[in-house]
Image (cartoon, rainbow, N blue to C red):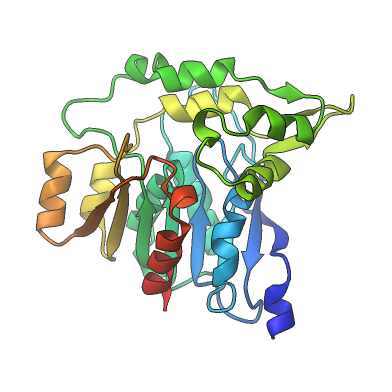
Length: 292
């Protein structure tokens, strides 16, 4: 058993019926054990980005970390035309739960991945044990979503300007080390992100697996109903919110759900939106507490 769990996670491709392709995943832990946790990454990232965080849990839990549509090794089509929400990401996650007939699982995710988990649990409470969110994207509840507001946001515009092609993966690591969003990341985590975040091109160079247009589409498509999904929840939800620059916005509606005991939320001082990379110990403890 120990030798099995000491191995690298198993790379999988899981066909999703009716979704146009397969969802890639890294499978951590004893393959004879039912899946305890499905972990979903942030926009622009991939499952392998979180390998160093999740691997220490493999002796106790079986964790399936997935590549969402348009990311990593997944083959699901990433079409931006006419897209207005993350409902498609929700439906991919629901199709995964059905394809593997997963039940009593913890849905956990970072940023956009966390929001996809919230949306999915509302549709399939019979398959979900609880939800654990690491600085999910929760926008203000007041008023209607203005598509132009998000389309013109600095995040969406920055994604469109992002360099997508490099000579090789070593060049990517060199360019990203200590800079921008990656400044708080360990060298190991950055290398893992690049490993599945870039793919080989026919000309020998490498390019982003998550195309800039798809990353920008995720930043600008916010017509999904996160608040309705929170209110429909039949399972426990826990949020670990970043201490600085959180994407889980302060909101009276969220405060009311916390006060009513519908959501457990804590703010982690000294962390940014990249809380999982900065406090892997808290991520590991939260997943253990939810799954064991």
